[in-house]
Length: 343
Image 1 (cartoon, rainbow, N blue to C red):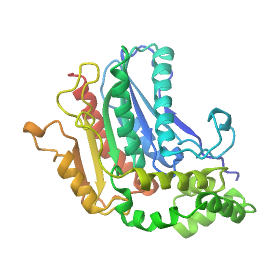
Image 2: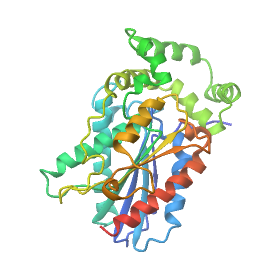
Image 3: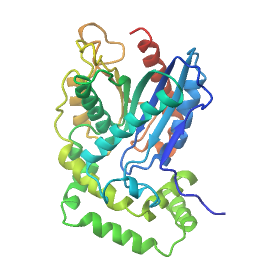
């Protein structure tokens, strides 16, 4: 049976929902490797949870795209503007541009003027998320019609000092080798050139114990035109750029925002043990920027930062733990939407 290549974007919505007074876009930003197909089960579960909630006159759009150059085919290359690989900063810009285009499309096609966005990021996608919030706020200071961001969810986030993590310590020396991304990409293509996609999928499923969908996505990534090169090129940027927390208190949800760009409530979910997030890095971030869920008072504006200590969720949750993580996140999204309705 032939296997299809992973989609470069996932867009879950009801095209007939044109009578809604308000629309919420849940815009998902992937980790690295940046293939959105890894998250199909997760996003489908999120969409189902939202559409079963009782929010009258409200439509929901759950959207995610593969980061640029992670596409499994060459059909999108002409729209990239230049040849890959792309830097981390370029991925941030491209994510923001894609979001702005989606907001415009929802307004025009669905005839909804009140469009709110909830950003969601996994791993380095959480870093991109915070950068998008910063750039949207800066843009709002000079433009009349600013995008409305109603919340942000950061899953197993690598937002500071990724190089101090267990995997970061191992990867950093290798990533400093000249031409490593290009050499590794050529080697991956040479080793898999004669392997049909179904056979490579079977081998990944057997030796890594991946579910069939994740195995197919991984096989497609390895055989894709630029995926391996892009992943390593971007990882090098991550080790170099994801260091100190340089965001202002306004980005973290400070309680004195400007009228044109209100505070964005944030939720963070960390694993108890994460090979891409050092325990000390996580704990220092929580102490400096976060708060427990039940805490109120002067710090009530700070992001709720939760460490999973009972479920055993992993950094790569999208491989085997999509449904339970989606159920947890779905509750957060409902809370954000309910709170947004009172603002």
